[in-house]
Image 1 (cartoon, helix red, strand yellow):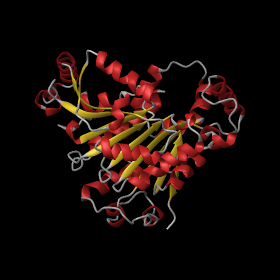
Image 2 (cartoon, helix red, strand yellow):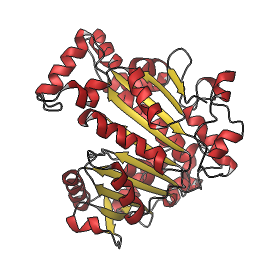
Image 3 (tube, one colour):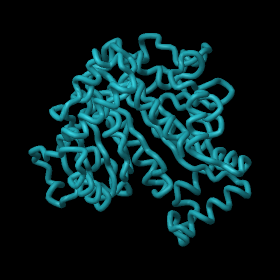
Length: 376
């Protein structure tokens, strides 16, 4: 869905690039249930107007999915003429099963040249900009493919990331789950989300995109279709399916809050389309997705949600960073501060990712989204 792509691209861009004080600091991105997601290639290797100068070496990027999926992804990358992939030395025991790798990835010479030329043609002012000139076949970035069944122990997953893949619990991290929970038992999904606040000590974000069945006829059709497609086991009860259990936006948000995140903001995709997505982006989406039935499209949009959660660092709780336009938004954050590290002032500015109103870099609008805070 093009609208979701726009949302998650904006989220990636701001997290990686937008704040000029923050862009040089080390950061991490973890795509849970990554499948064949190519966000790493787009955001770290390819030049675009939002890309930070020389940013790629400061990012540790993790794609995590079932071992068979990661094996296929590695084969595709090895066979691609667009990238050059080098396996990094590792003491990782899991690499013996041929489903996990730490890689050094760079654009091939031809791809780098083509990307550079396209960037220069798009904006001639970039001839004097390091965004274009610094991207050559020698530019590379750390990329980790981790084969892991997300239904297994979440604690074991983080132990593996820390021990074998340079995951740093004291570095700001963004976790992304795109239509992942729907494949998981609710208990496994909750365990996975709860493991993030238990492990990470720095400012941490989660971005979630998932269907919400609601309780209307359209949702029942979705449920039947997903069951017929094998996404939901026909023998499963409603109590062990994340999709069945979390049928509404509010239940998805409450789930993230219960996991331990301090601030949660969410909206259905129709409200996201009307508020977060710009006029130009809506025009692009309309060109990408030709529709005959507007009413059906609106129903679909109402049955998917975009939710972001933030785990505040101790610095974010004590520097007066405003997460909304009202006083309540600034006075309900003083929770779960034990064990958090003090970080540089620039991190508090990144924390605006989870704000509503004029402060929101994503464009969350009061009245068009829901907000939850941890109780003091």
